[in-house]
Image (cartoon, rainbow, N blue to C red; front, side, top):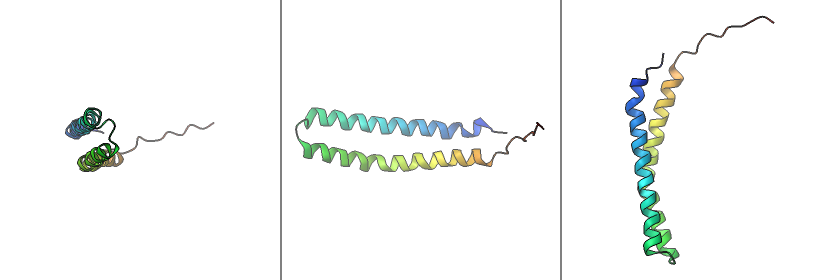
Length: 85
C-alpha cells in the first residue's frame, strides 16, 4: 500500500527545486538579453555561471527523485491472476 502522505514533503521539495531552477534560467536569459545581446563572451560567462549555480540543485533533485522511485520499487506488486484460455 502506497502512503502518499509520506511522499508529500519530497514532492513539495521537487516542486521547490524546479521553481528555483526555472527562476535562475529566467534570470540568465534576462541578463543576456539586457546586457549582452551582441556580446557572445558575456553570454557564455552567464551560461557557465548559470550551470554552476544550478548543478547542485539538479543533483539534489535527482536524489529526491531516486528516493521516490525507490519507495515505489519497495511496494508489493498486486497478485497476478492467470486466466486459462
